[in-house]
Image (cartoon, rainbow, N blue to C red; front, side, top):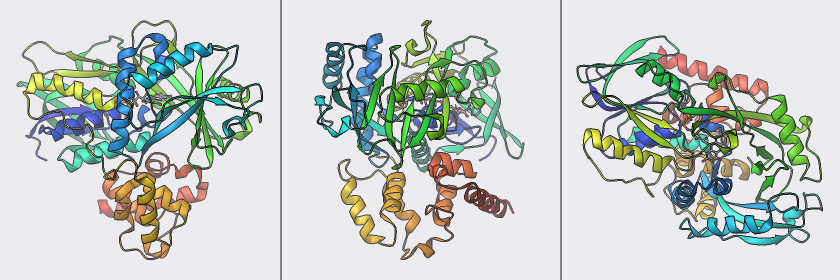
Length: 504
Ligand SMILES: Cc1cc2nc3c(=O)[nH]c(=O)nc-3n(C[C@H](O)[C@H](O)[C@H](O)COP(=O)(O)OP(=O)(O)OC[C@H]3O[C@@H](n4cnc5c(N)ncnc54)[C@H](O)[C@@H]3O)c2cc1C
């Protein structure tokens, strides 16, 4: 790339919103440069509850626009990436001390009917004394509703949007921090710094998109000298424990204080429990679960499960910071989950377009709204196109995962059933790019543990911007849950060797 090239759009932030906008924009014919200061999805976008959901709870706050849009996205996204997104049923146990059954029934009626549901099954009532979903729960819970939403591998959704954007011609740079952006000669001059080498570069663009998530106000301060507070930073944490139940359905639990949380089957052997909601003041890059959050989640889950959950059961935790649009709500959990897109800049000067708020579930619609704003400034190049456009590896019918898995296992019989499932869930049809003509595990090179092979690592480095063991073990895959410290260290050393051989 020459320094003189003027991109149409420069995007700050490689989370779901930045990558979703990059993909949509490049697919319409704009030239795009995206800079991410860490790894793709290293911010909030890998720390979510991983639900493609309407947000039943948001109905209580009358967020009908958001809920309807999110509900409609469930089936759209499922068909775009059926390897990493799939339907999930949720069990919502009823109890006299919590929201009344009629209120929940009304919410679920709306849920079933306002969101264009076609293939997802409708809500039903469950007798927990007879249904297996009642087995792990305390006997006091006798009745429940069961309803549909979706599951997503959040970090991979980000990477697949970036991959597709790059395949269509976008420049995607990771470990590239935006330091400054100045208006000069009718366009933006952006200074970026490679965080590993410290090398700096100038990039020119007509339009700047600020999709920096929890850093959005910080970037506005750097670029526009603004000290306005547009987003409210709200911490949310999860705990991961050894599998608490075998049922493939998830649980939606209510706490006595009216807050809700989920217990979700996770990575075959685990249960994911979360989330919390509390205002956050610190550096979003340093957020960590607090002792109070751990106690809150353990106590909440123990109120429902027959077997209590304690600190010793926890195998992993993660925390993220929601960049919620600051609508002045008094409580963190009441702040709007909807997104707001705002331009800053005087008429005639290069514009800065900011993303405030948003959900993983609504990222594609957010990108379409952003493209409407971009078109007003740069002129129209192409029509909306992303609804239903397959993401890499997702080019199969959304209901055909099982037949795909069967043929994959037939072609690679040397993989264990668990490894076949893991690879197909992560990479979909692109799993074959990793395996190629391999006839035995040994054809895939070194095995670093839990069947993480050299071939898979090389694929992640070559095609998915993986640069460190953490990128691989905690974002491209979740093998960090399975590998020992020594095995993780070996992955780290291997990556260093790879990076050095590329640099040499
Ligand atoms: C606990 C929790 C649970 C959630 N659960 C769900 C859920 O189940 N379903 C759902 O739909 N949504 C959920 N969400 C919301 C969703 O995760 C977020 O709205 C979404 O991930 C925000 O994405 P983003 O791209 O705006 O921000 P981010 O993912 O944070 O991306 C912003 C990126 O910008 C980069 N950046 C910042 N400054 C610079 C700079 N100067 N130069 C270069 N790069 C920079 C950062 O490194 C970061 O990667 C949840 C959020 C949380 C915290």
